Image 1 (cartoon, rainbow, N blue to C red):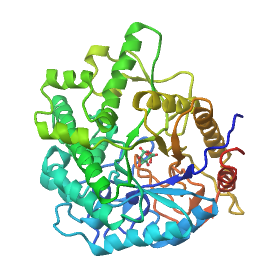
Image 2: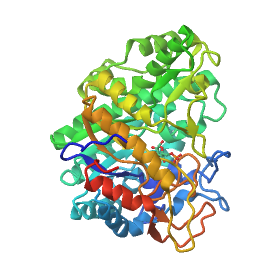
Image 3: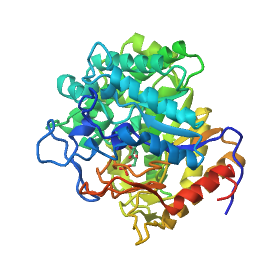
Image 4: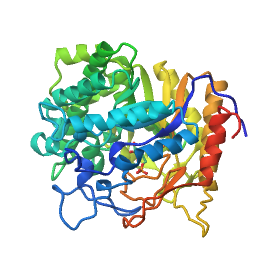
Length: 480
Ligand code: BG6
């Protein structure tokens, strides 16, 4: 297996999001977020998004793994693995419980003071996402989320408060998590988590229109935040965050190849705007042809140019294969319609295709496209774990997955010359799955005793992968 030492200062660590592990959903002044109205689902049953919290339903994010009260113990375990960085989000509703409040909630701000101080105590650099699928529910109900221009101000106010408060404790930031997920705009879950939009009975055209307008406001909000952040601390590194999945045609037919290109254009325009400060030609033409994004001002265009990001953060889980048998290239709208099964790849228990070489391809594509430092801020395998009678967990499948991906990452850095800031695999400690709300879909090196039904004493223990990852970090990637 290929391996190489990563450059000095390489940020090894892990990534989580507030709503998926903190719990304490209504403690110390925290408001209700979109994640708080999502029920538990399964590999085959989608999560339900309810109209507020309904008694008797199971909302897994309400208590999650209670990181809010266990963070000291959890960060200590991550320090034991040698983490150099820890990515989390700041729950918007801990700081602005309703999203449109005038003043922030001091107890929420204090929690993150303490969390970041704990990280620094162990020499761990916090990496912070501002908006990770946890928009205040009040903004969803009152304004229909990011379909409303007012959301720009609310987001920028939230970002400014965070930048000022954590000016000296956080250097690495990201604005919107996986902003490009909403390109599959027929998915209620993706529109709700990305943009706080409840689709109800909208027609397909109306959904697509809502997505282009909302994403535009998010991009303007992100650009304004980048500008403000750099004023508050010029040393801040503020990135975007996309769910990058290199696209390939199912066959070598021109129709499949053109469809793959169209797919890439329709998915990558979010990060194109983040990085270049302007819309790419193909998407601008598509938007104009369809009459979408009616509200874009000259000032917006200037802001987009002035607030470009410092780096490209991305998650990598799988590649995407497309077939023109599913949709003709010129009829491509909702991207999910084009997707075909790749017959050459294995899948996880949740049907996610496993393609380690795809990570090297992703790193090369993004480097060629953006010429910016890259940061892998998510990667990993969701799997069922078995606890043995003596409490041990032999998760060799997880080690195998991560080892192969890290090896490909190291080729990209060492052989292809990719400028990579770090590697933060998803869920170093078991947490609530965003997609299904399950606890039993596990990514962690650290096991948490809690299952889908919410049973368990929340005790933490080390899986076999814990010691393996510790060794990888200790040797700076050489010993896989
Ligand atoms: C990413 C998200 O899409 O994938 C995370 O940024 C999420 O929030 C992760 O948890 C894994 O997905 P899932 O559905 O297995 O939790």
